[in-house]
Image (cartoon, rainbow, N blue to C red; front, side, top):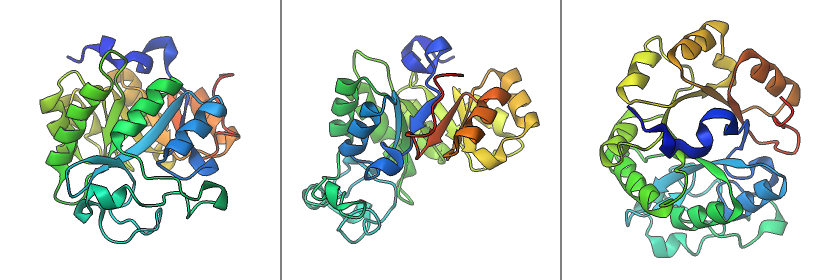
Length: 254
C-alpha cells in the first residue's frame, strides 16, 4: 500500500481545494515560472502543470506535443533539443507583459515551487510512443528534486506512464486521469495503488462520487472557472478543482 506520509499536502485536513491550472491559470502564460509566481501572489497554494520530455530526455513544462501554440518555436517537443527549448519565448502568446518568459525545465519549476511553498499536481504528458520512458524519467527527477519535502501528486491519462513511474518510485502518490472514468475505473486505480481520481467536471455524477467515497479515493475535477459551480462541486463531495480563474474560484471558505 502507498505510504501516505509521503503524500504531504494531499492527505487529511491540509488538502488544497483549488489548483491553479497549468501554473497560473488564465492570469499568466501556461506552464511557466511566471504562472507559479502569479498563483502564489494570488494566495493559491496548489498548482498543476504538464511535463514532457525533450529530444535529450529532459523534462520540460509544456502541454502540447508541438511548440507553436504556447511558444515562438515550431516542431515537436520530443524532437527538439534542450539548447533550442531554452531559447524559446513562452510568454509571447499570452500578453506583451510576459514577453521573454522562458520555457522552464521541471528542475526550475520544482525549485520555484519549493521556494514559494506550493503543493504540486504534476501531470505526465508523454509524447506518443514515449509513455514508459517519460513516466520513469519524471519519477526519478521528482524523487531527487523534492527530496526532503512532500512529493508532488503525479497524474496522467497514460496508465503506462503511471505504471512506469510506480516501478521507479513505489511510494510516489499518483492519480488516475480520465476525461470520463470508465466503468472499471476503480479496479484500474487499485492496480496502480492510486491516491486520487481526476476527471472532467461534466463527468461528475452522484454515483461516481459514491463509488469513489466508498473506495476511499478523493475526486479532483477540471476545468472549473465558475465559483458557483466550484462551490456546488465541493458541497457534493469533490475534493478539489483545477481552475484557470484562481482570481474567482476560492475553496478556502468551504
